[in-house]
Length: 416
Image (cartoon, rainbow, N blue to C red; front, side, top):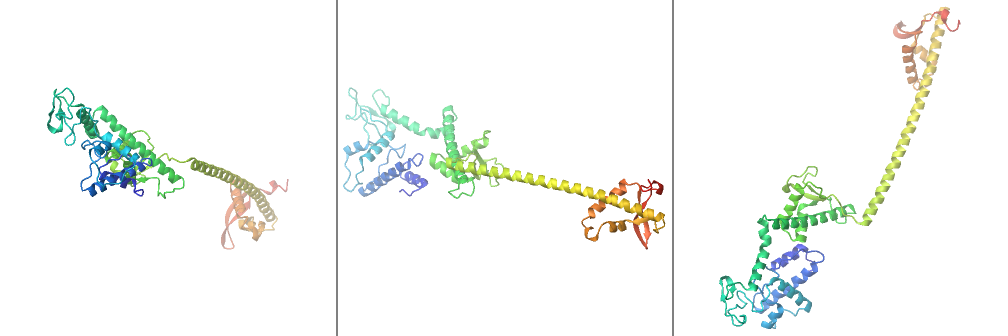
């Protein structure tokens, strides 16, 4: 029986007429021992050729029975009966039967079949006449009132029916009971989901696919532990949906990104506060600290690299600007010298081609490298130098851009 799951153990006990409470790690051994006792009773009853007497702990509506000690005084088991039970098991059975039967009156017991009525001389109280047996198995005394044992049995029957009545009742007492049951389901639901989420975060020993547990699995666990019904579980889900507080339980549908508006749409449940052990929390804290340090140094190195690159670019821009100014000076000198030579009739035209100037100033192997410097120098002369005029002339049958020196010779730098 040790290999039975909690659900199978509950099913076996219910099949034998015993309604167990919550099955947990601490109560499991008790219920396994109880199942063994019930099976022994059934086997003994079959061997003796009679049906097993129902145990008072298994049904609240069954007729009252005497304790095992009183049963042994009334009849003797057959030689082929069940094996002798230990004294500890007999005491446990006696306590359970005492809870399920009404206490015996000192004037006698009342019942439908096995008890004695006050009309019986053996059970009549001293000083009173024989009572009259009422319909339905109740007995009344000479004054017409119910006996104390019968009143106690009626109270027990009402108490046993109370949970059923509270399901449909709206009075304050039943509402408080319903709220207590819902809170118990919510507490177990929160505990189970937080443990599963903590296991998922701390190595995932159960190989869970995600922290979101299927609603059928959660429902089976909660009903098995708390002993509640499916309606109570759905009432707890309604409580979560309608509550404006953060209960630490997230309800999710098939599309995890979409919010859930009804219980029917709930596909899985997830805890927002995983329950993790001290070792797991320490490991996660160390990993988090290392990751933060890594990100910090990585950001620091990245910023340092960006700063170095910007300084390199600034330096290159300054060098390029200085090279551009040097190129402007050389261009002005070449155009001015060409104009002077034209004045002395040493040149045929007063202007000179732009590309001719470039080829005379920049060697072929450096023209690609100095292309940007040359373009910036040309743009600078076009926008900032008034002594050089850019024109277009037809030279050797081709249109060509040329530079012409426009400053008169008597104002040239060489004459001053």
